[in-house]
Amino acid sequence: MHIMSACLAGCHCRYDGKAVQEDHQDLLKKGEAIPACPEQLGGLSTPRNPAEIVGGDGFDVLDGKARVMDNQGNDVTEQFIAGAQQALRLAKKAGVTKAILKENSPSCGSTYLYDGSFTGKKVKGMGVTAALFARNGIEVSSEHSL
Ligand code: SF4
Image (tube, rainbow, N blue to C red):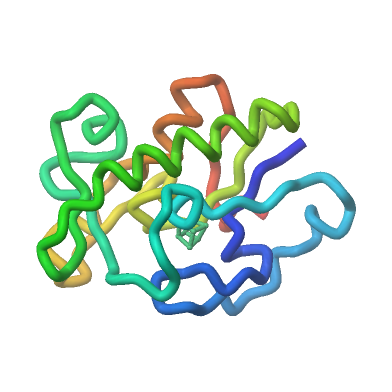
């Protein structure tokens, strides 16, 4: 079983209230994936301010060494960690072994993240949920692997 970023499965849960344009719903239709949006699970509203990890990657956030900030200067670290934990809970209950997560997201990015400057620059790294999944033995990849 897979868990997949809900915005890849047609849910309008992105920060801007939209879904991802491309159709990635095959796994869902075959009953091989469950969708989840960690940021919504963490209690954030939709739409919401865009957020980026400042001072590290998702592992650093989990370890208390970096923060997640929105573009208005609000610290949303607590919600991002809570959402990752809720998503992990769901994954464990569903027997998930693989995650297909939206690249570049501060929650779901598996290879690249925005660098925290809100200027569009990317750096290598995993988002908060991707990092928590990886630490718990779930194989993480992006929509590009589909
Ligand atoms: Fe939610 Fe992840 Fe999609 Fe962001 S990338 S909208 S956190 S599922």
